[in-house]
Every structure is written in C-alpha cells, then in structure tokens.
Length: 166
Image (cartoon, rainbow, N blue to C red; front, side, top):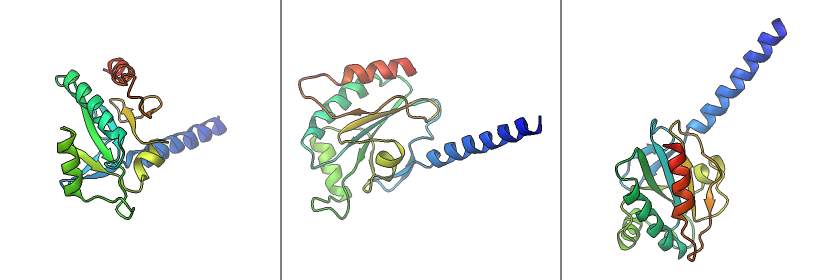
C-alpha cells in the first residue's frame, strides 16, 4: 500500500510539473501587454502563427478574418503570433507589424514570439504559417494546422475543431 501511495504521489508531482511548465505561455503584444495565451479559461483560443515577411501570411489573414466573423458571438479568442525575429535579416518593429496587420486586415491582437520559445517549443509548431487551437482549459487541442494551400479552404477543418471544443 505504501508503494502504491508513493507511486501515486510521484505521478501527481510529475503531472503538476508538466502542467506548470506548459502553463507559462506568456507573449508580449505589439501594444506592450503580456498575454498568457493558456490563461483564457472557458474560451477556445486560436493562435494564428505567421510572419510578416511570409507571403502565405496574407492567405492566413484571410482565413483568420473568416473565422473571426464566424465565431464573433462565441467564446473564441484569436491571436496572431508573429515569429519575426528581432535579430533576423528581415526583422520588423512593432510599428511595422501593425502596418502589416492593417494592410492585411488583421483585426485580432498581435503577439510576438521572436525566438519561437512558446509556439515552436511548447506548442510543437513545426512550420509557419500554422494554426494552433487551445481548448477551454488552455491545453493544445490536437495537432497544429500547418502550412497553407491557397486552393484549399483551411477554415473548414479549423472550424470543425473549434465546433467540437465549444
């Protein structure tokens, strides 16, 4: 019985540590706020992971606009997560990201993850552009929707996942 209690205790600590390690998913917005994308309890969160220099991010912006309109009255929150690195050859400032958003009609908050610490490491995004969906508890729901085919309406499978979580 003691062994069973010990194993349960160890498993509980491991589970708590894993949740805590993932729970630190704070990103800075271009407005200077820190946003913990996993702390939107009771809401489905859609992370639109892209980069201003990536041509497919324009297609991604169109898909995002479609989804934002569809879920406007639902408990769904959208964020555009820019992976533009500050030290990269094609680095952009917060002001330039805002211009990119205006040009592409991105109406959702823009967050920065320049080194990929959150989206690449913690959320397991392997390519940009991608969409990551978090359930109402802040956990990743399924695999990220990676890559975009301009000939395929990516909003359809993303909508199915969101609907399942609502």
